[in-house]
Amino acid sequence: MSVQTLLLDFSIDPARLGDEIGQKTVFGQLETVLKEYIPNLILATELKLEGGSLKLLTGKKGSTVSVRLFDRGLVTVNIEYYKEENEEPLINLKSARVLENQLKKYINIIKSQAYAPLKRCLFGRYYPTSDDRLLEYDIDAVIFDEQSPFQRVQIVHSKTLGNMLVLDELQNISEADLIYTETLMQRGKESYEGKEIVILGGGDGALLYELLKEKPKYVWMLEIDEVVMTACNKYLRSICGDVLETRKGPNYEVICLFCL
Image 1: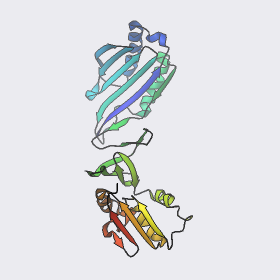
Image 2 (image 1 turned 120 degrees about the vertical axis):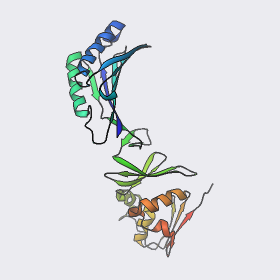
Image 3 (image 1 turned 135 degrees about the vertical axis):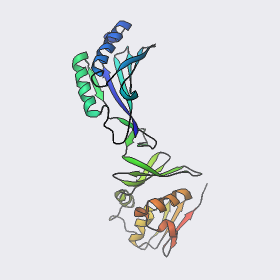
Image 4 (image 1 turned 90 degrees about the vertical axis):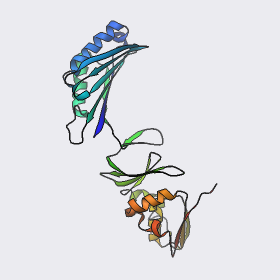
């Protein structure tokens, strides 16, 4: 179950939105087309705002449609409704694109774009990148969620990636990410046999687990967050083996400490 939010953006000749009459005319055209896609759609309220206006409509099953008209030639349409897991969507990306094309012809739009629906639910499906872009994952469950002294630690389940470690809302590693670990250690290019190695961090245990296959002399792993290691030991065993459970072996040791 989730709240589905579908966004459409349009640009038209600013002269058509320059006054109240023009905005009402454009909105009336939008409303006519929207009613073909959202059953029982009625205007609930409208507001005059600086630089334009806002119209709020309601429709079938409590759906809402907000239409924002900017006097500089921009129009945004936000469609939002609640959807059960196995329920057919009220409007999906395919039908939104049909709607977009119909509006292009009917309203004489210059440019437009329909976005894939955002699925907002009790567990996160979207995680930010380091440059503030959103990535969507097919998350269907939160398996572990605890605030450590250092960060929020989550293990979530993805239908395609398996269990995944998420730290402070940033995705770290999943059961499908062996290629990430092998790239990090330059497997096949770098020889670790007989060498002494120090890992700073690496609380998921994946790097230590893979390095031990290369027959090093000794590996020390220094990690500050016990909660991360406990969670990964329980829910990410496929990538860390038993190294986070034993914590020490003939040629490795895991040390949990906080260094300033």
